Amino acid sequence: MNNRPDVTDEDIGMRAFQLKKGKAVERSVQRMRQGLKDQWASLTNHEVEELEWVLGELWAYVARAEWDDLHFGKLSLHDLRVILQHGRDLRKHSRNAVDVLNDVKAIVVAKG
Image (cartoon, rainbow, N blue to C red):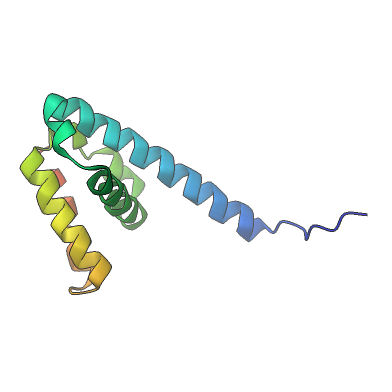
């Protein structure tokens, strides 16, 4: 007898969403790393984790077509630091989340 509860379609959908988000964030971070070259090493592990979190939030917010048009490899170290500050605002709920995510998107779009 199977003691595990059945997996629902909702569970499968949520897992698929998380996997797609993770892969998209991983690709964007790889592009940033390649674009920054040696400067990437100046970011701490915590900053990289925070950047991944912000990008995950951005991925969940923007339309897939918009995400595909974002050029993460063109971001500067300064751009990443500004994005990290926006991420702190997002975590603290000090500003409207939609406004913060639009600001992050605008930084990346400006580099396109």
